[in-house]
Length: 517
Image (tube, rainbow, N blue to C red; front, side, top):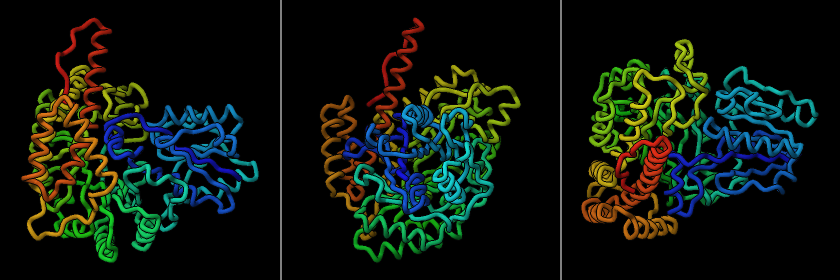
């Protein structure tokens, strides 16, 4: 059976980093690991192709080849996914849709012939058999969450590896916490399930054998959900790196209580972790308590961030505006916190009540849900009625982005971060090779776009001078963040233009000026 696996395109958001990736000559940040894993679960006798529409076009000849089309995606990819499904069905192709999107969108809204809800390891054998026999059912739903030992090596042969900036590995699923707004615990549960160390090493060996030498993102929603197992893996990763002359740097997502475990942070540093994404959410403790983000309470958030940074890891932060407890001073408090934290990449979003979450169920009972949401918490649309006046909330959100992504504010945060992570004389630095073709290309493009033709050239050159003198031991990281800042500033400028267009349509005066870009 000829099986075509298709990954829908992501919209241009803060998370996509599309404008930064162009500097590197890359087309997307990460490959579709879920579909690569699904492909490995399908019968070996099936012919398989994968089209990631984030890096290549879906052609008619791809569809002509296929007997069945399998798609996966997240809520934010709903529009492009449905367009592909309808294109396939118009050609008489059978379609199967799975992935996280099926847990938040009703099966009828996906338009597919067959919908798979839940993790694939326990479902694919039955689905494949039924497809072969022509008896496939409209709906397949996992009755339990499989252990990670059942997850195979993803099929790397299906992707165009060099079109991505980062490769991906999944070590665990699930998170022990109980945040009201989180859909991860609803989909994957609160008991972290992990792969064996041997499984992870096999995936790294596969990447290394395929010629990959750049960053690897461990995509777990909480890498330290099971701290004991995380320590075990970090020890093995450090040993693995010591056995390879050229090794990977690792990125991960974790919870803020990482700052409480200095042994684990040291192990992560030794293993090559250079960045970690943390859900900080808000500097207002009342908001943390109300949303059941209790792991972030009874601590200094700023101190916790600084401790993690002191172990050489860049902290990327997730922040949310729109909690019921937010007062009108939350916007200034948010900006102040972000600037003091030294978090260059601060993903500030409006609260989204995602279907299936505790938050959605509560707001539904209160009659405050407006629609099923967009899956993009860095857009400026609300899918529920907030306590704060909606217009003030959206305007405040836009003002936060404008302030934190002005060139001066952004570079100040980068310099604060660099001052905390710059290696001391004699200290071993990252093994990641910075003098690569992609990085040289990115550096030259950055000079041209930001230093010669950019509207904030003076800010850029001041930063570049500081990076080359005061922070020269982490110059590569400084340039990476300069390029990432370009993407964030372009998106912020687009958001401001949207506001101006809306004001023009309504016949209202638009605020003068705009964000630095």
